[in-house]
Image 1 (cartoon, rainbow, N blue to C red):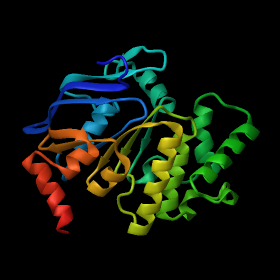
Image 2: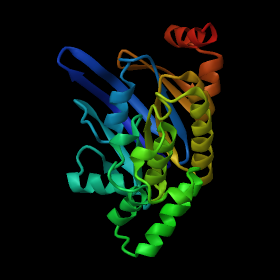
Image 3: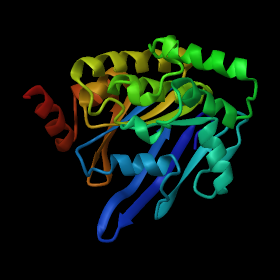
Length: 258
């Protein structure tokens, strides 16, 4: 692992019975970089995301994370409480379905503030001010701070999830199809918001998407997966404009001919 690498995986494999979900995957992520993992359904991209984030353990291989003080952590040998603290502080996770990350019976401001409280914040006024600020930064009317998430549209729910995730200024965020299931016009606005926030705060992102256009807009580098293997990786423009692997060529041509 390079001295400047933020997250690194080597030889990661995982099988579910006879199904090889991941086969000898290597991956690296640098601070402030957006890495897209693309491929068709069943290619292994979400499984890899879960292994990289410690939500699933590999059968073989290892994943390391470098802390702000330079310490290397083996993600899958960490004690469970330490991994949970990492997810509440340095890391964040944005799900395709924001309901997986939001408490629907808690107000918008409460959802954002909970993550601060998990880090030890106790001053109500400071927590509420931070929640209001992040509603504004994610393009949610701050007057809705006391509204319940169930009154929000799909796009607003996703923006609220992003506000909840970013309020603690994580260094690394895992995103699983963050614009999936949204109308095209809502997707475009959300993608612009994500790109702006990631650039402004220098956040590293591992992004899973089946949409090549999303990878092109957000990612510095792109990994293409097929059958649990990484078949091509490189700078996003190079991979998508001059694909070398037949499978990548097929993915790109299917978009061009759609």
